[in-house]
Amino acid sequence: MQDHQLRNKITWFSFALSLLVVWIHAGNAELFLGTGREAELLTRIESAISEYIGQIAVPGFFMISGYLFFRDFRKGSLAGKWERRIHSVLVPYILWNFLYYVGYAVASRVPGLGDIVGKGVIAVSLDEIVQAVLHYRYNPVFWYLYQLILLILVAPVLVLIFRRTWSKAAFFAVLLFLLAGEIALPFINTDALLYYSLAGAAASAPELRAACERPESGRLGILGGAVAIAAAVGMYQMGLRTAAPVGFVLCRLFAVSGLWFGVSAAKLPEAGEIARHNFFLYATHFAFVRLINKTIAMLLPDTLRTIVIPLILYLSMPFLVLGISTAGFLILEKCCPGLCRILNGNR
Figure (cartoon, rainbow, N blue to C red):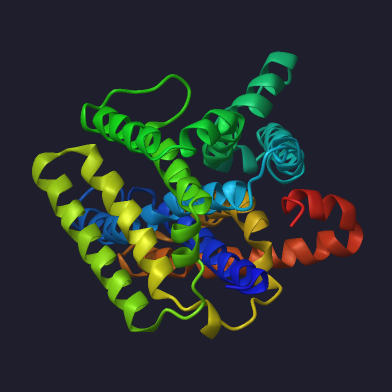
């Protein structure tokens, strides 16, 4: 696969995954319907979409990030890769967390908006700023970037592991053992480490990299994708029957892999400008989802509080948020192009 085709496929995948993340946070049954039969029905519908489809989003992000970090990795390239991730991950992480804190602190003091925020009056202090910026206190979806930063920092260890087949096998066996035993690692999520390092190991092995970057899926690619999706379904059922987290982890791993191998890069159209704003969409969606859901729930008359309106709102939320996010991006790009580029992860 040519670099252009790979980048285009990654852009499409990242864009699609960003839309799926919106559904994970768009649940609104209790907000609109409280408790009762209709609320339970709506919760089941929304949970089905979030669990069956939306939960592959963040694992997909980890796998794309791991693959790109270790692709074309050479001796002496670590410093350059770290430097690029400072601009594409660390700086946006700090800036977005600070902006979320400022936004929430201001909104908590504005009549009406404070009720929507629902956090009381947010303190303005150095300690609160530190917690917001370093530990994503007011931007909970950035737990993913926090984990990604930690994974990028442990890259030198992974490089050593990827050099030998036996060390890779032992490493992944240990990770599966930890997941099966529900044994947590300090700081880093074990499942995130598995997604990231498996993709990184594939990028480091010439044969696996060639398979991952084959432009035409063809019958073999479609068959491989179908087998992986079937394995994902099997792992999900195993997770349900045994209540074992490792089953759900493997389900997401197989699902992302199946989609990747089943989609032909050569047949994908050129990603449009909107698809290239996926980082901005990911960073802004949580605030927009909460604002839309809470505002409509506050204004909706009791006579219209049926399952219909919140269900339609839930199903359309990714596209509503995409429209608002795109409009905000275009306005910001026109007014402050440099800042806009930073907020989009320098993409």
